[in-house]
Image 1 (tube, rainbow, N blue to C red):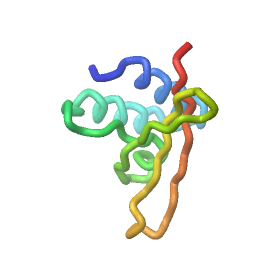
Image 2: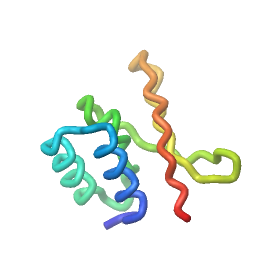
Image 3: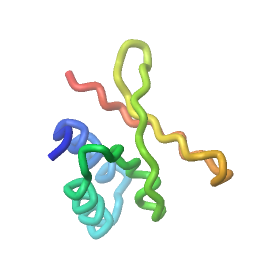
Image 4: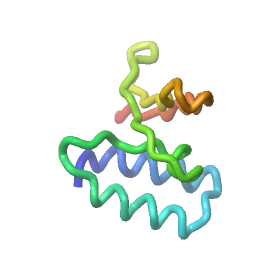
Length: 86
C-alpha cells in the first residue's frame, strides 16, 4: 500500500463526512489498485464520481493535501485535507 498514513487520514475524513459505507469500500478498493505512478485520489471528488489528484501544499509549515480540478471542468473542489502526521 502506498502511503498508509495518508490512507488512514483520508478514511477518517470520509467517515467524518458520513460517506456511505459502500462508497468508502469503493475508495479503499481504488486505493489498493493505485500504481506507483498514479496520484492519490481526492475523496470528495471520488464520491462525486470523478477522480482528481490530491496535491501536496504547505500550510503554515504543516503538510496538507489540496484537490484542484482542471479548469476545463468549470468547477473547483479545492478540498483541503489536513495530512500533517505528528
